Length: 396
Image (cartoon, rainbow, N blue to C red; front, side, top):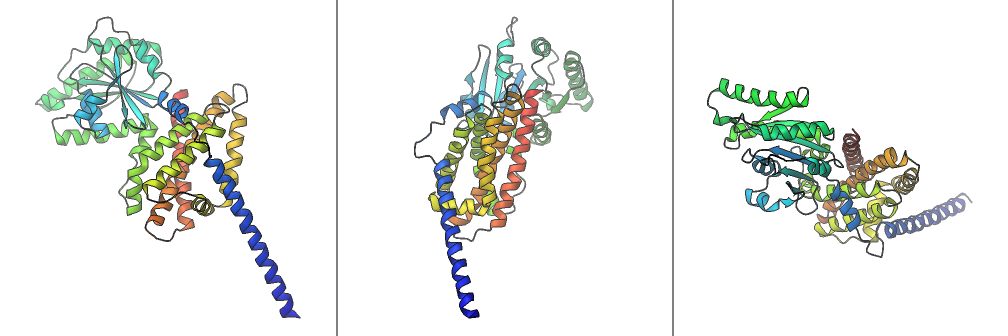
């Protein structure tokens, strides 16, 4: 009798597990179809929205001050690539987007300073909708900086630019330490008098490896503070594994998808369609680069590793963000900024987690649920924080 009852209970449990398995498969299939629509969604509007608000580094300096060399040093691109990459933006400036394909930020280089009637109004307009850092680039041996200072006065008066950094270049052209400090101090004082307070500065020399290395360390740290997305881009500690090194190679692509998703989700009633489509495109692209076919089975396994609670929260929070954005005033300010930050963070986190998943699959290695969840959570917190800081800088 007891044996019969035990067998009956086991049979019912097996049927229940089978039913749960079928239900979960159906659920993941629906989610897969949602994130991977059969109709190829046009992502150009979302990409254009992201490109129109790229974090911008505005370079203000005389010809020969070292602006192009600075761009080359920050991006790691060659002089030829940088020279060919500048594109007209206004009548007096050009832009350089980096990377050229799927850009994450850009440089705005003012070229009209030599003209006595230079008016930075168009350049200010080009920057005011983006988080930005204004870099005043001055050659240490050149005390005559009237064109730069006149432009800086107009920029300061506009109130559109809040973050300023002075970059003193060519410091080794002045032989003595005392003479060098005097020249740098003179140019620094001129800027601070116009700006009305203390301004951060860095010193470097593109002709000296030692001075350049020291200066670039300070410059990168200052830029990461001014433009948070550069912190995320440059946050590449010594790789502890081959998987982490491999993700580093794909990190820019993941960040571009995250930026595009965040930019599109800031617009009312748009993110509900655009964000899943962008994430679906990213998943297919990353799987292709790992040589893994991305299908319902792979997606179901990956989503299963993240857990059903993630899937439910993903759908509910995405819908809730769209509703919040419809609230007058609040929805278009705080609501949109929050939606953008969360979509940036979640897209970046999904990209990071799926790269770990795909790496192990491509190597025929077992995949740890704990590792996938941890990769997602760490990336989400990191990405959301960076996006929130970026949005906060735009508002202030």
